[in-house]
Amino acid sequence: MYKIISCTLVVIFHVSLTTGNSPKYVYYDRNTFSSLQCDQCPPGTFVKQDCTAERSTECAPCPYRHYADQWNSDRDCQFCSAVCKELQVVKQECNSTNNRLCVCIDGFFLDVEFCLSHGECPPGSGVVQPGTPDSNTVCGECPKGTFSNVTSATAPCQRHTNCKKRGLNVARKGSSMYDTVCQEESSRSCEIDVTLCEEALFRFPDNPTNWLSVLVQRLPYTTSQQIDLIKQIYNSEEQPFYLFKLYKSQNKEYDSFKRLIQDIDVCEKGVLKHVGHLNVTVKHLVTLMQSLPGNPINKEDIKTTVKSCTRPKQILKLLSLWRNKNEGDTIKALKELKTNQLEKPLRRQMKKLGHFLNSVSMYRLYQKIILEMNGNQTQLMKLDTL
Image 1 (cartoon, rainbow, N blue to C red):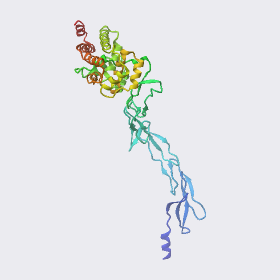
Image 2 (image 1 turned 90 degrees about the vertical axis):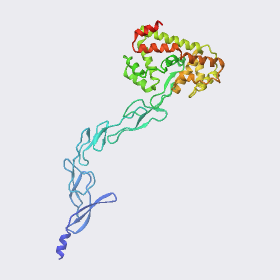
Image 3 (image 1 turned 180 degrees about the vertical axis):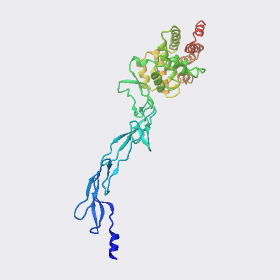
Image 4 (image 1 turned 135 degrees about the vertical axis):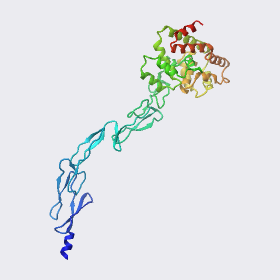
């Protein structure tokens, strides 16, 4: 009876057990009928022979294409089974301590079982965390003072240019989608990017709804990058102004267009005629700017304009600054001007300026430009004879 029971107890088993810093496993020695604490084998090896009361565990290296990545009490190593899939490359080849490691190629990350391309952050957002072989790109809206004007999977938001540090003035305040535009603090600071006459030409109620496409089609020598940059920087209402500037630079040698430029110059002289002779002070100009709707131009900018610009251009420059700051319609703003605080001569001339920019002669010039844009030279010549 005793012998039968003894036979049933002669069993060899392995249990992983770690005590302290020494990994152990329990081995039941059938020769001594006792449980032993055997040392596990280190990574890269397996148990060739269990320990006994007289000797330690005997370990052997993993054979070719097999590995053991942990301390273990196993009788064999694991087979290197990993196979790299489409859009994956081997980051680490199989060795005695690691299975083959595959990762997605540059620009892709692993999503479940497939490598997908890293997402791109649109303009106005930048890369907060670049994509890795294991994770997608993380985008974030550009915080105040920064911008991104590209669609990219790698570009973070950039800080706006500090015009003050460069000794320059701010010509156009930056946003989340474009950088601040600086300009020199000199006589050039009196230059106006869009004149009142040019603005008035694109503010008529019956403007074509396809102005942008008409202008783009008439710009055969302009690169798509130039057009895309204008569309990124300016809103849809202002884009025609800057596309028209490109159009003028490309067609200035044509006789028909020279006549249009001459007409625009006549219009500009008419504008100066209404405001050029006004004897205004900084106080008058502050009141004028405060009488316009929207955000007023601050007093420091008004003082700078008075110092750097000649008297005929001071009001025109301030109106241009107002339009850029408010992204507004200057022609409409002149109609909404609160004149009760203005000196009588200034009030009278500002009203006349508003009427002039909405006059029949302006509408006639507007029609001529539409005909020129559409290439209708015959009708253009008829208008010149009127």
